[in-house]
Length: 88
Image 1: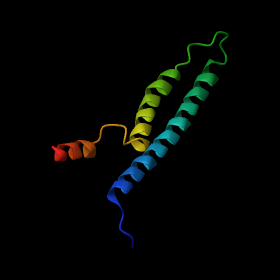
Image 2: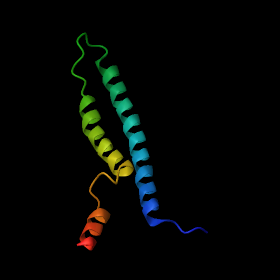
Image 3: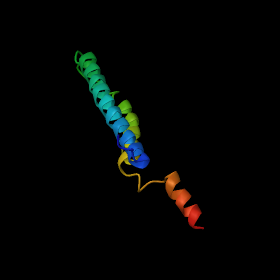
Image 4: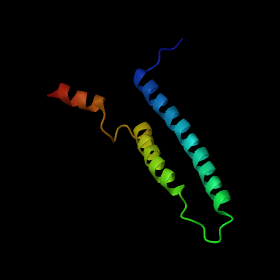
């Protein structure tokens, strides 16, 4: 059996976790919007769409997780800091 590269395995796990989180985010926000639409359809003036709040708040978390999973070389990482300290 082939030995796994620990760094690549860590990145792969982060990306898989992001994809799961994104799909839950999309399903749940679609559900929230359907609830809002169905419960406010009987009113003449639709109230403010409350699903905007979870969409924005949760969406920020998804965006941050995306950058952590796909752009690790851009952000702060313990490995980068460790390498900097070793060079000193």
